[in-house]
Length: 299
Ligand SMILES: [Mn+2]
Image (tube, rainbow, N blue to C red; front, side, top):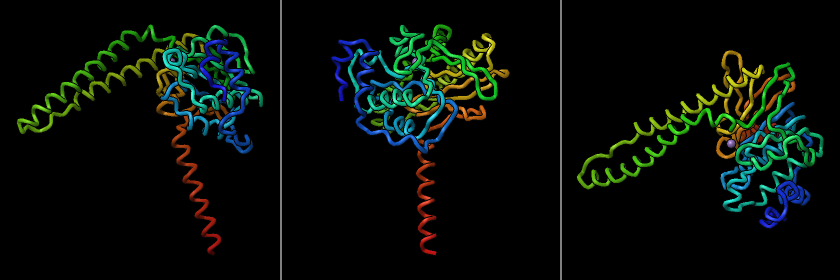
């Protein structure tokens, strides 16, 4: 594999990824026959180039699912973190390779860079290896709804006050955790029972829930102003569907913690897939059919 740091430093990012994609993947791609097919697939917040990226699950997803159109809704490659510390295992190459291969096989691929891969935003309107780079897109579903597709960091400025609140909550929480350890050490020596931090934890979670809820509403309201029926975004790593007075909000989640994708069936029906759950279901089905085979043999 060629994933060497010099390639990124001496060439432009685009030619670097072209060269990487020309090499064969470490983990060979199984035949695309028999994959689950959807009209559209949306994924985002993959964060290639970081240890957080769940590459194995994403490769499993890409090898199990196909679609006519695939939207990469930003933060696919984490340029911020790559610049600070170079991290590029072969599995991350294998993902880039699979996406470009998919484009060659005829899947329409639209890449909407996010804030972590904003270095690709300069290529907006261009197309590389069959991957169209856009700042945002409009998607028409099979049943005639029009959805705006964007990464979602566009709303960070509006959310700033709330983000500061969430951050302050976080800093206070960290401080309290340290305090609690010391308090409990003293209490322990004095023979007193443990002092619970659950109230603080609840406060922190409440902050996060409020932040996410407010974000979802801000994005949906902005979509409504553009006259569309809904919006698809990523960015906050929280897969979700909500309906705000008829305006649909879809978040395709992430491949760091949740490992979710958003899909559109051929009739226009949309669904959020949780890939770890899909794998568990697949494994259970395989066990059930093995069991059925054994019973048939025994009969
Ligand atoms: Mn982001």
